[in-house]
Length: 478
Image (cartoon, rainbow, N blue to C red; front, side, top):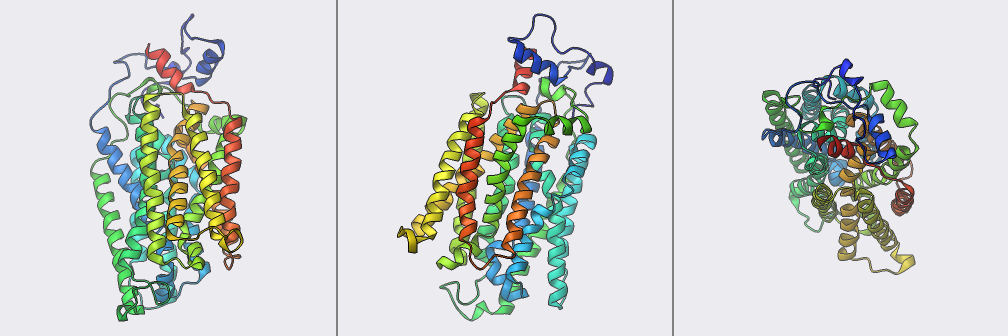
């Protein structure tokens, strides 16, 4: 990022003149950033009103990708009856999300070299292709299942951009006192799309006999299939609308950069990976993010499957998933806004969030084992524990992203977040892979939640934070 605002000759110029820099350690990190200002022209610091339109378009794309990814988990019982899906199929439909992150580094390279517009257009086109493939009307159920799997694969390939590009977009378009908020909005909308799948699916698609109290003749296989296809066509139309709007207007960057960090030169693609893999502090905080968020993402994708043994209906499971993610999105944006106002508090915020996540996940796990623990297993306790868990974990995502970028700056934002989300999806994929073989008894899946949250809490406690990008903006601007 930033190649359009500086040249190779300017990259070799020193960042700070003699005497500037408050402390030797901070000065050293500033020099290591290798960031330079444009040699001529107006200084950085201007923001444009169109940045909110760019943020809106990207957020809608992230929303659509999350909605399509989580289509099948909340209606897994109905999908079994309508299309003959097995438990293995349902787990695999969710698993295509993390599998889609395998070419993650290619999308990171495209984002770094070609910018936002080209990458976002390609991502939006993949979502359109994926949703369109699921809508092809064929009578052969075997072929139809394969088309649905193919559509989920294409939508999964869109995941790297919607998950990784939020900090890149916020740095490119937003000033230093708006970056965390913009990152939170862009990254949280993908989760909100997954949450709406918990709401839309069970409300539109009736549950088959045996999992819902609202039984009737309309819950026949043909009617269920017809309602599922209504959802698929609606998602396809929404994806086409977003692609058309993005094609009409989505500039790669503003005419002038909004901050010093946005105008600075980044490390090359190869040097960035060397810097990340050799930075023990980054690896520590990356694992603190990847393990619990990967476990939670896989757990959320099959929440209906997990709650079915404790006699929770498809509709109730959908509402639990919906409110847990919505609560996380609201709190995440609020936390990011707080971080914009009071800078340098990212580690403290994460410690508070993961303390709550560890307690709430332990509560949920012990509640599901009520035959042993004798804790009350009621709708209220399930709602409360799941929603609190979602609030604490989902709201940590934008805080983590900002901390990653601050820690390893001047590594490009897309590459940094790409590595950590790749790790997160790797852990999610491994967990769902085991789920395809061990899906008859799921208490082990629940225990993965408090274990991963506790491990992350310990890693965050041992992490030494730094704010290299913020230091550059504040010192050079002054």
